[in-house]
Length: 423
Image (cartoon, rainbow, N blue to C red; front, side, top):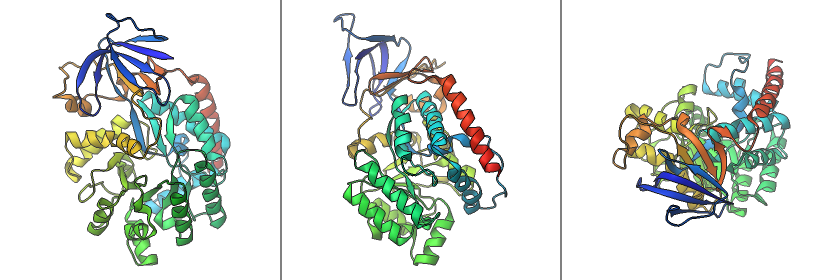
């Protein structure tokens, strides 16, 4: 199947070059795009979308998500008001993830997939946890994402916090997934992963030529625990196990690092993912890129699914807590594509596109694009979304699933989840 986007203003997401053209879009994970002039040379297409006055560019991608948290919005208050980060985990997120079953995971994935797609993202790197529904959890999420039209890079959050049996099930689920799918080896955080589980996870990473996806120094507690129990900093420990050896490894957060840790990451192959709004919400501190490599992506950490919003938050908060300029914010926003391409992951080809209905009161061009990106664009400007050459959002309406039916299902599952949390 082929698609033509007529009369488009195409913005190359790497060079920011503007081109007025018709775009021929091929379907499939190996499909591409071609600039054509359908007025001079008629081209057969199965579908044509008029993009007059619209801007077309590469779609977005989420560098770190937690789809399992999608049903948390408006949930009952925890039994105790958390006073620190560990208690936020203990009384909110670890209670929630233990309450999830298959239907709830499916509903969470549906809500996340729709939110991502309608905000312009066609690829999601997700970090999943559901300790009482481990086996088959990744396939459940993948089925939903693929039905919706999203490509993905999934992992299960392996942890010793619920005992060795759960950790072994997490390892088993990961191995089963990596046998036949692209993915990562997920670990929660160093302070909930003992040496035995860590060693098994890295062995699996090497066996499947994968990477580790782990939270790192999100709060000072992670570093303090490591020093008290292992007499070393978090990155020292991860580096000794070989976690940083893979260019597929993703280190999420990286707030409370010392100079030596930053240098180790900079000298490694690993990537870092910033999640500014989540850090602000949890009061754990501000991301600072000092001493870190340029391999910094952006994520949402499950707070929402809007990558434009994440980029703008990183920029604005970074004005007082980081060294980040217009180009730096945009590069972090787009670095996820470099991560996926470098490591040979499929699903983020040139035929993944977003059409923006952005009717600015001022001129937009190559020279001032970054100003519009930071101070003008928002998810309401996403009109159409094309994933692997297929239209999955048209005029802001999902084309692959019935949103009304999905909302009915997600609300039913949210009610079930919240009732469990009240007990």
